[in-house]
Image (tube, rainbow, N blue to C red):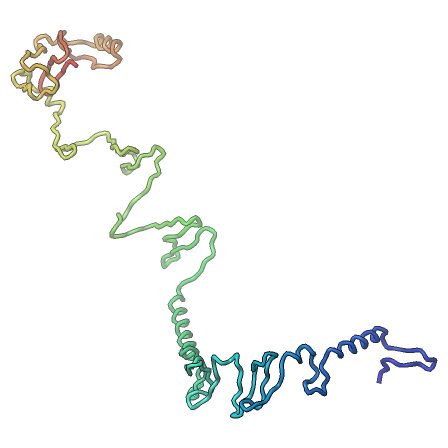
Length: 325
């Protein structure tokens, strides 16, 4: 019973809120755009009222059609509803199904069975699927119960033994570290050396002293080697020892000139005269060093002066032969 508006005794108009007058005017203008209720179409916008109509004919008790006379929805005389947008599927109920959705070929897309109430979608019993999934999750939990997660900035992942000791890990940079490795395809113990000199293979003793190595060109270097046989490119090579050379008698008759490559005339005599071998002392060795820049032994022997020309040859024995080139 609160007064909203009125005319006072002095003839002045009164309103609870002055803007209500403007609102009332706006409402009246809006009502002019709606279909009068007495036309049987209800209080709806005129544009909407002109876009569809209600009809009734021999097929439909009542139907809604658009401005182009296309049926939007209707109810047939047998009571079946008609919705064109839903022609691709239908809802049924029967002895097997409490509720089921079927396609145009009567294939069940989904629904609830009447015997157990299970929901079926795409031929899959959802209730059984959920039950199996719960069992699988329980099995996974049981199998992974011994695993644990440790957040550590030092490792991405680690492997520990029964005592909690780290036996392997992956570093933040992705490097893998294994403290003990046994395999059928790799040695039980191995090490990797990054050598600044570029050596590709290094052999060391128990105190890490270098015994031998292979350089970047693949050439092997060793301080000493003792072998009974030596092969070069598959061919056996005979090497004479120092003691064998020093003790071998000098006999020119044993020299086979045909073994000497580069000799011009094998018929020439050997220019080396073993009877004219001269010895020298340390003073002479110094003179040799000053002359040719190569150190000789403190004492030794040297050949006689041999006049020769290109192609001549001379030899002491078949282990050392000189050819003038």
